[in-house]
Length: 140
Image (cartoon, rainbow, N blue to C red; front, side):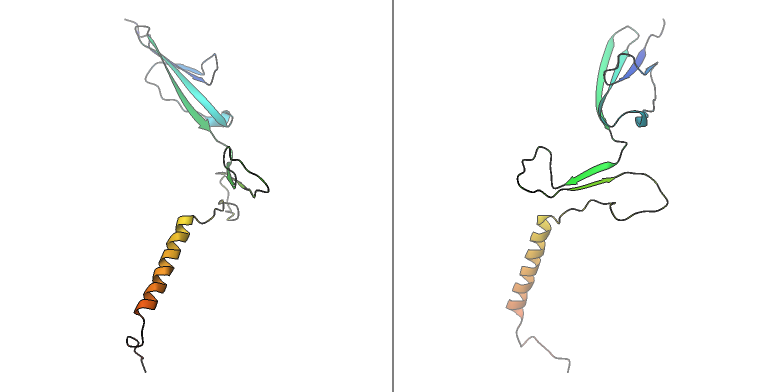
């Protein structure tokens, strides 16, 4: 009996597959040749009895620098003047490391401020309720 099992791999809506293989197969997807953005990998498999199966795997390519935006979210309604911080950084390797611009500045989360306020409030409360002259002892 002849082995007619095949696996064909297409990118997005291409008519011609970029590879037709006999399973099992290992491929390396070179994303440097694919533009940044959302894509689909379409895999067609044909069994030895001629039955076809299709699997579509969506993925996103980002070979360029990461773009971080602080101050504006997707589909956000804004009015008046809005401060926006934009940062772009990639994984380029170089001999020198520039600290400035390597991280996107973010505000301190409100829960951190709440914890600090609770801790300081308890310290003041403890100091007021437990401090008196009888517990104070001088070294002199």
